[in-house]
Image 1 (tube, rainbow, N blue to C red):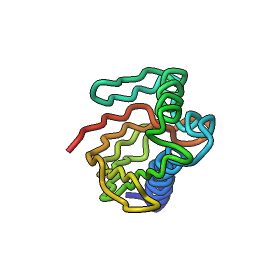
Image 2: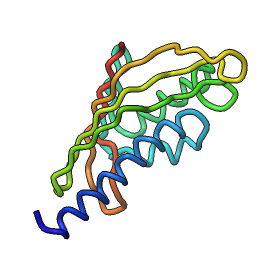
Image 3: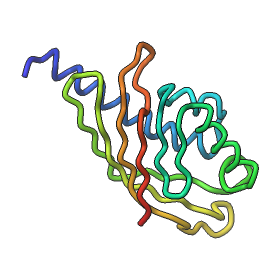
Length: 139
């Protein structure tokens, strides 16, 4: 493998790791417009019982979770991402797998409410890597 290709793969992996982390941070406490900007226009969000298609639908789901107090500022919840692996071959598509923990009562008695696995497909676009598909598995 050439040094140039290896350097590109490392840069891609770092950007993808930061994208996965930023999605979790924005889900908890950030601007939803920035959150949705991290998805491709036609992204799919495959959560059991609540699939979403495209940025507008993903935004509607995030707004619903915030308005119900499930996530977002004041909900005292946090998404924690761990055990993240990225597979990138230098092309414009990559995949990642990570474990996630969803904590509630983070200001008083933090407790894991849910946990699971993300299987993500990512695409390189003109303005950087974006999430194209997220498959969410509970447990």
